[in-house]
Amino acid sequence: MSLPLVIVKVTDKFDKQFSKIDRASQRRISLELEKLTSDRYAGEKLVRDLKGYYSLHCDDFRVIYHVDDSDEVILVAVGHRNRIYANVYRCVQIARN
Image (cartoon, rainbow, N blue to C red; front, side):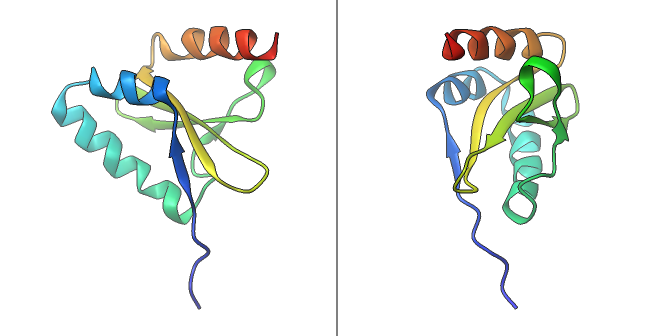
């Protein structure tokens, strides 16, 4: 039995943030992202204003993503755990207005 194909899309914001991370951390994050190909809900569910989003942990970094109605995984942002949630919260508030 084959697993269903998981489509992963990347936002421009994610791309820009990912390019600013050092190469060693990029490799570790990429390995964690492979989990999403077999389980789109591998990350931790976020709550309150970030409901509907998930956080995939990789050392000190977090990948924020959501799964859309067609079950595609959308990588929204990546960054250090100390700053990522505030940044994503701001982006979500702007998008909702």
